[in-house]
Length: 228
Image (cartoon, rainbow, N blue to C red; front, side, top):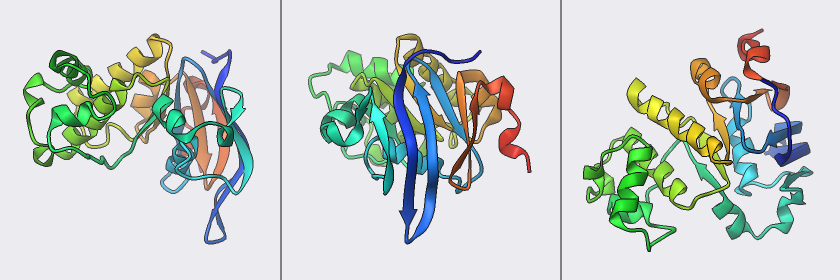
């Protein structure tokens, strides 16, 4: 169905260059509230860069991005990154144990709360006291997602969250995304998995060589990212 209503992010005519080469070239799009937006396209299309802009890990050279109607530059960056949580494709773990990692932004969380967060991302509570260095890549990525969920963010930004996961674990992540949206949250998902996009996305942005090629509901533009 077509997504209607307010936009969490409004992106207007954004250009970002690296060494004089445009990575994003006059990009305009919106991220609807209380919905899952999938960002799709070939490798190098600018998808991950777009997510970085939404948390001000990068800033555009020209153009503007607004969050909740206010330009990003006017938001306190720490508050922005608490409200908008990015789970990168390559997990970054900062604590020695899983329980401490998930409590990183909310140290008051009890063990039962942490176990519940692990369950939400398809991990057993037996991981609570595991060392983070002993985690597989897929486990580490899901621990990062649980850490993000612990902060109860308004927006989840997920960069290929199921790329290193088996089918059952990937299904748990899909369920997590849909649950976040059902609670009124917003999700932005970078994915190469067309089936996943069909399962979880309400809105799709198709990118190609730094441009937005199309936006719309999944059933209307399902095949555009693979068209010549």
